[in-house]
Length: 268
Length: 279
Image (tube, rainbow over all chains, first blue to last red; front, side, top):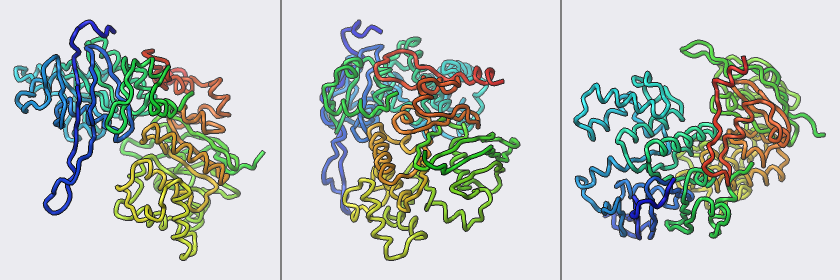
């Protein structure tokens, strides 16, 4: 996995702040701010995996959401392939919605229970690839399922018929439908059994090799992040306190909080 | 050698479903000694939670239950509802995976712990007992937290409340069903440390249900590995980890990502192969 072939990284985040107003009283007056992300800078080189670790509430998901255009930054910039994408209008951001996709933690909540798997996969195709005919969409959906190692015979089934691991595969297939370059994986394996977790981690690594994807991998478990990532960012209270190669994070952690995270991993 | 607290013999559990009878647990055997920690390890669907619920007959009446569950001189499968009620909570208590799903959102945590112990304690002692229970699980300012609702507390704090509730009646056996699966690793380490401390203080036995061998290693004296409703391996934790005999046990141990094993492919469990071996 070559890290620095291209001079410009795929993603560059500089001085990113995301503050949420705290409102109180009858007039919902702003009485203060929650500094979810407070001045964060990092780069994600093309074709690599950057791991983002921290506890609940450390601001790691907020960063992912800001990059995906779900939260608007309070300050700072996000550059994607050299173009600033923070603060774009919905219309101007539209092409990036396709190139930047998200995978979420809870595969039970992230799939609409009333939509068949075919509908789940075809809906984004209808929006972002309007030229495709119905038959082509169906063929593409079947192909996507095969990519995540689920039989295409399952297209007519509904989410409740699948296990947690299979649903997470479907979530990944839906993200891949857009032919994205950059995947934000927000705790993709935290809700899964260790055995299923291993399958999903392996699948993500295979897909990266096959499709040349770039990942921002968000998790609280340093063992998983260290396994999959090239570079690791350690986050607490809205700030990045340590940033190093996965190997160095494990071999020579500098920050006290990183050491605490390492110590918390149940070891065999 | 301490005395045997629980003996499960040839336990089978069946459920009637739309697709016919499903045998969730098939002839399971294990024993627990007084004060011992036994881990039951297996994947989702291996029958570990159903086994735990069966111990105090918490399963629906319609399910088919056979075998023997011998607890401290009593046969659980023969007890009447009143006798079961005296054991549930007082002698055998549970904590579950999702603390927020187990707590009632419209009552304060103090009221909920009080409800759990009211049946077993005189009325004027209840509040005092609750505050003490909260303090014992490391909740600061327990008098104030008594009046908090579950949504005002974090996941880790709510799990502490669940533990306080489970331990309020000083049970001899605590059944912890994936108590840290929904929590961050740092909070997970805190909760496991808390359970260790409480185990030493009270001398209670713990039946820990988990899918993660990493947690088993530092916590359990013995381990039972469940696979498709059967106990496929049972023994001392150190022994099982050092020399797993069953291929499923080996697979479960190997699929955990280890620090310092960068980018190596994680082992996965080949169910088709395991089934072929079994038959």
